[in-house]
Length: 405
Image 1 (cartoon, one colour):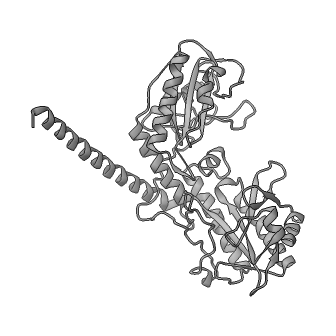
Image 2 (image 1 turned 90 degrees about the horizontal axis):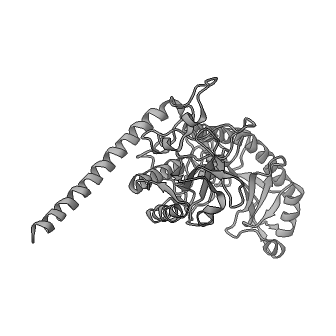
């Protein structure tokens, strides 16, 4: 063994030890942050649902139901011993933001350079109409800024705009450092002096993988010389750690609420009758094998109606078969006002149960009375509060991105 080989072995050992030490330090830091954040914020015990393909519908648990306060049964939830890293998402009102009424420019408050800072600030800002617009969000995305040698049209990014790597990609541009970022499509008019490529770090399919991050960097690297534009690749190891921490956080906070309408004993509901009753109540049969109830104003899904059995609903299935019950399901993170949506879903579930001669029950087939339903509503509010505590407003663009499949 020569000196070169020995040196390489020593360097490799030191690298491995360094990674282990860094991971231990990072985990301890996250636990300390969790302990500080949980103390004032925890009002209830929102339960996680799995963020992978094996996700199942949450149901009402038995332990607290017996005491008149139904809890939600974890469905593959992550262990609570390590706790979610509550410092992953920084507050929108960070000290580096210009205070309200200040004349500081947007360039000072939301430059893409801030995306590479040690303590980043969310790059979210008001639109000209005073409402939030699509902006790069470096708290939940990997951002790669590009500096073209001269302003370029959005069409020059065609290869990047049409790339698909398993995690959502977004491209933004602006005419100068004082302008707002604009979401880019191939036909977006104008020319842009600054560009930024964004890849979502986590969603319900899990954290972004090293392969996805490497592919993202390669795509940007292939686009950059065609503009031409200078860019600095991100630290892949750091972005991978951010993705995994963000996914752990969202796993802890991913709560869906289920109310079961079940026929007594061996009775069943004919599929044709169920479809007629559901559609009369305002539901529509969606391609995903479920009925959806939409908000009239926005078209957003407020809650869904799914088969109590494993079989998804379809027009053919409903025409030929029957089922012994259905589950009303509410996705807390994706609703602007989840408590109000729960109130509507509760009334719809009661009406359906009355119409079909069924019962509104928990997962142990115990009837849900007013006290039990009130306790569930408190859990809905607590789940929304837990999201708000880590700066993920339920129903916001950030929440819709993180809690999508």
